[in-house]
Length: 229
Image (cartoon, helix red, strand yellow):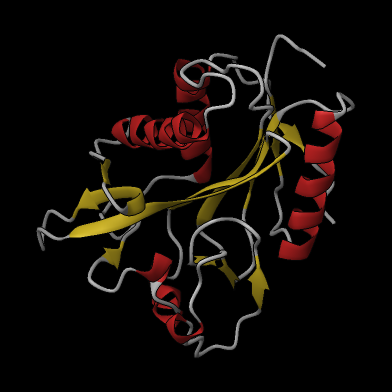
């Protein structure tokens, strides 16, 4: 199924993680059989922790006893919660998309990084990648320390991607203390708010949409609100 625009959807209310997993998997299967459109799904989750395929039990502390889920994606422990923009990308990787050649998973992950970096630049933030550390990092101007502002977790089923990215807008930063984020102990986590940037979800979403086409080729559709479960 081909369309002029890449479908963009948005959930206005926090989305339970099990529902998100079920919906992504269902859509990915339908994309493969050409019964559904490729899409970006923007949302927030209630507070929770997810375990990637490399997650270590010792890296979960969870003092607030938030629910934990096996995500089935690559990576280690990740926190999701209010104030964090999730963008799940369901894309047919058997076809080229902008900077991403067909069947090139490494190029797809690099494109997600590039998309985040371009988006951060809209707000004067210099996002950077580091060898051996998945995600996007910024330098805290006060401490001079590198801190993670965006996480990336990808799963691919029959060359259709699901899961995606998480950008810290204004989450409760104390909740990240419940895990060793992505298994990296020596570096911290940051957010737009922590860096003194009062950015709204609408502003961030507009920047994500603006920079989508430069990286992935197809222009995004108008945001389609979902009837949340």
